[in-house]
Amino acid sequence: MTRILIVEDDKNIVTNLTEYLCDEGFEIESASGQNEAIEKMDEGKYDLILLDISLKDGNGFAVCAAAREKDDIPVIFLSASDDEYSIVTGLDIGADDYIVKPFRPRELLSRIRKALRRKCKTGAVIELDNIRVDTVRGTVTKNGAEVFLSALEYRLLLVFLNNKGAVLSRSRLLEEIWNIAGEFVNDNTLTVYIKRLRDKIEDDPQNPTFIKTVRGLGYKVGD
Image (tube, rainbow, N blue to C red):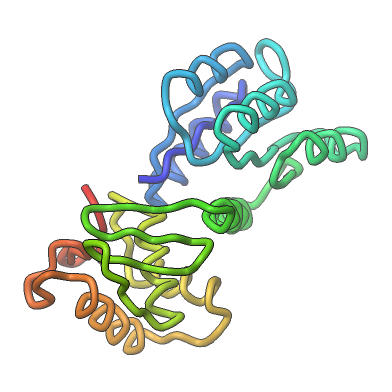
């Protein structure tokens, strides 16, 4: 499951963001200050950080620098500061995006997914069970042998792997594939592509264990 660290000292924002992003399938942790945030990054691995500039102690710029130095973790600033200096400084020290409060939740969600996709394209190799994806070369292997996927099958597999452990509804998958592919995909098309993908990566496509159906809810990959 994609893990996000929220670094914010406003408890109401943390509570609302946590509830919203958990509903979207993310695992959320939070820190109220610079020291706590850096300690959490030292102790665990995060896929993205949502970060305010003004914190309980220290500031968001220091946390951003630490995040980029540690694991090149994508960072999105969420700040009430809309002055040019703050925005430019945040971007110059390596933030992927800067959103001024108040923000619209769905716009934030779109920018989070964009930052995660950008990270995926920077050279990450994603592995789960016997499947390995090299996102630079755009290749997929199963037990060391290359699996040839169409563009949409490959994009669909990346959506699943970038949301390991999360149940993805059909509407969520359609939204993701639309965003990634930039072309029309309807519900019937999605069914066809999930079947084709299973035919190519499952040991027994009739009894799938990699892309699992969660009855009444959608699909998931991984635990």
